[in-house]
Image (cartoon, rainbow, N blue to C red):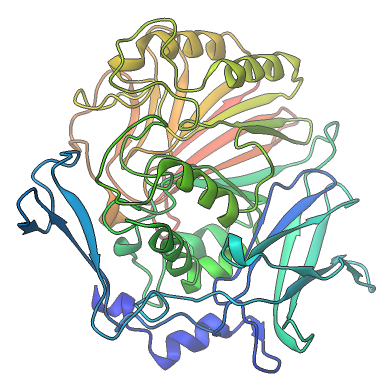
Length: 490
């Protein structure tokens, strides 16, 4: 793994190839993220940094040990939630949060975005917006009154508090077609992006370059964007996880030119299989509520983490929240036990019934069909949420041309529920090193496709013979197609 963390001169050159530098900062070491795109608007997320590149991976890392009831220490507690053992973060001698491997300290300053359609000569520009030091030196800039179905060039400009020019980053985005336009659409989906499981020689993940070759209109990250569990024992270390992940070259290059919808799951909210009222000393001073807040500051997103977007006449997607409203996993199952919460569930059913899109796609952080492992109890495919799982499967299966796409599981699959006929597509993890958790040869009756491998899912809507068709393809990390389904509209 050392090759992934030792950033050579060549690596740094690749990171900076899309930037222009002016003066002495502020910089954009963690790139930009474009999100929440609809027919007329988009959000551009920016974080200003003190340095042009992150601290190289050859720098030391913090260490976490667990202190027991009589002062003894261990690298991991005997049981994860044992209240007798608490984590203790030890910084390398002479190092701080600003100098450990992957750090990209924030900086004060202002940001504006210039934008224009690909065929236009003149730029429009937003006003200068200061970043917020209390929100990790980030800001979100809203682009409004955009044209539907149009590709835009972007230029993100920065300046210091004294208005000296900083760094500039070029990017692009495409807006959604009008809801009555029978336009083709392509999007990609992934999950399970573990920093320690990078596979791109220059640093990052091969799947991002493979996705770019498909020219996706948008991208969905279903959650587990990063993994807090082992090291994020305080708020500063949680933010450091985001900085080191989004300073990776492949991530910067992808997100500057593909709009995304970001969802969260357990590992990028707080810890494995977590819920809001869960108590545990395992995460130190870092709390569930802080995890919720950090997510909102680190991705382009509006007020609610559940939302729906329309992409032309043929496609509407729903992105749901699976952590903020859930009952404890340990509660007995029944009609009041929930993952989504009553308000979100009512919103989902209402907006689905109101939709006239040809294809309707629920994108969930966790499975509704599975199958999942019997020792898990965290999603609608598990016994612990049987009541709500059946309710949702029955409702979705009653809708014409509606399917589920999910993340969370570290393997790719297509499953059809034997009771309702609901189809579910799991995208699989971001890299082969992160694949696992299911026996490769254990293909159950529900499975139509099974592959314990890294990669991503692509989805396209088109009219190849004049009839709307939804095509779903599983890809490996290099983009090769491993499985393809073509679903014609009823």
